[in-house]
Length: 122
Image (cartoon, rainbow, N blue to C red; front, side, top):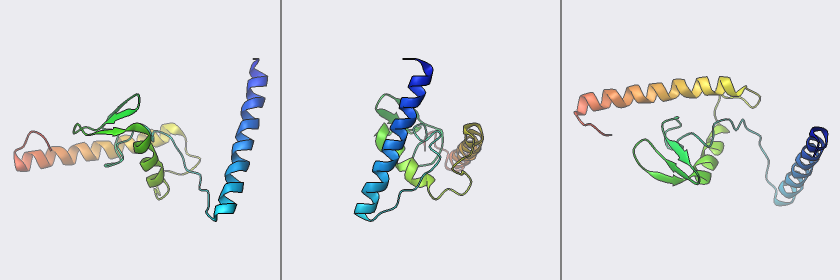
């Protein structure tokens, strides 16, 4: 397909999905909330940091815990609703800066904990 046709089909699909979400939410009696989804599949949902790694449908945390990547991303999206620092229309590069700062603070706290307890692993 040509670029223009792809763009038109994509925007049409986006409209169809948005309408379907609106209809279903009205029938069920719930609300649809849009959030910024940048880096939600790469965050560890337990600590809200970029300390894990995703490979296919598995997400492995920094401590070796393996989770399903879709469940992890869904938990991150749910948590993103109440995140005051990351807004809906924020650029992905700004989101990455915030997440890297949080991850660095988390790593620093892990290092302090290891120094106090004398353990090599958390």
